[in-house]
Length: 330
Image (cartoon, rainbow, N blue to C red; front, side):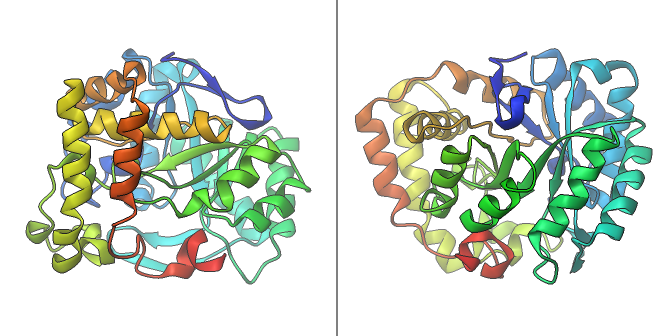
């Protein structure tokens, strides 16, 4: 396991995880055989924490990961999610957090994944029609039944996290967090640190933008990022400054921008006092090797200051609907 770390509730995972959404058509078409090879390479390399969701590819991502699990279930800490109705590529039609839906969702995920237990089961988004105590109470029943080992919450506010933790221990919060998405540091991250909850940043590379390899003006018609305000042509042009800052630090350290962005998150976790496990996704095996190089990269205070200053100048929201994420409800 790559530099094992303990999240909340005693859940041990690799220091870097793997975000499965990249292996669905959300950023363009995917070859399933290549995707499976990438997953195997991740586990071979010590990345044992694999993250998916029931809506990625309309369930096809869970089915893909099931092929990995057939021979390697004991090597993987498996996370999946419930709550969103629809797909990232086609759009979402509803959010469900009621107990009846949760019971159906977990059984469907278990069947697709070909396993009898999920290590970390997340509420993907908050259903504001249902008290969070009811949602987490239903999730806690799954732990009692042995279908789930640990509970997680995605894009919750600090208050929602506190209310949920009063019902059952929460192992992790998963929300977007990166050099250009730092709103969670105001309230959610401090609450997680106080409650002993780990943090799992998704899109730690800014949906690829921080690596300097994404041209926002040439995204395909089916690319999910076209709907995100900060990828709009005028915002993306202004946001090139943060990419330049990351590249500058990378040049100084003989590293890559991806390694700098991930090392920055790990440094923030140490500074703010909580375990942080980023889950970058990729379709290419060699990118996994590159990302793992971040674990041995040391950023100086001057590097951190430069990256922090660049993050303050980011233009555009990280979500088309601010209420969709914690930032819009705090």
